[in-house]
Length: 273
Ligand SMILES: C[S@@+](CC[C@H](N)C(=O)[O-])C[C@H]1O[C@@H](n2cnc3c(N)ncnc32)[C@H](O)[C@@H]1O
Picture 1 (tube, rainbow, N blue to C red):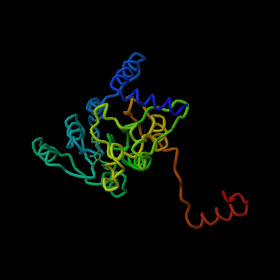
Picture 2: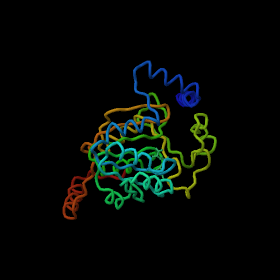
Picture 3: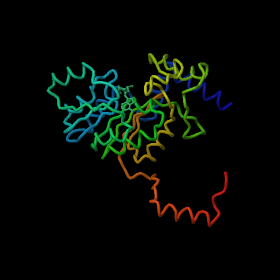
Picture 4: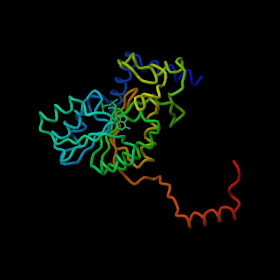
């Protein structure tokens, strides 16, 4: 029953009419409604006099948000991606006489994080749902973010009564994936949804459909405080502030680890699950 209602909700929201009704309803309730085209304004609002990194800067935009940040007064700009730079990026950089630095690498990889260093403002748009371990990517973003994270990502509608839920898309069969096909809203191709999961496509696949509540909880656990949310039926834009992470597993040194092990054994609290 709950599943059927939820599927109905998803189908309604991914119909152009349902999506438009939802947007009007949110506006009527005074809730901020997001839009991909807001990204430029959000960057303008946050980057003047700040250092900036754009994670996933290339596909379809050729570093545009990085150049925009530089033109909005960012002091130092780094664009990061797993491919590129494209000829369009290089042309634009030359024409603008831009100092944007392109870094080729996986933003969840420690050596790439070292190369990026820390910056005041991080933009990460259209990347999180392409990562099989979204928490790890958020922790990586937290490592490079001194102050503000502008995160935009695909999400799935909230599951009323089942907060923090998520759907893992790889290995679903074609019938079960069809629910998540957003071609009705104009998306052309969703690798791993409109076709089978393709291991060779790596981060090109869609991995996780996070509900907004799940995304907010992951952000909090990774060390971000959500200052503002702009919602859409199938996407969220979150403006977050970097705070101390409430989660950290501290690894003991060898001597301490042995003492812990002896203590656990003497108390007989570790039983087979
Ligand atoms: C859907 S595009 C989004 C492009 C742009 N940010 C936008 O919002 O229009 C995702 C981009 O992120 C890049 N990407 C995916 N995973 C990444 C990772 N782990 N590290 C760095 N870049 C990544 C892809 O190559 C691609 O350029």
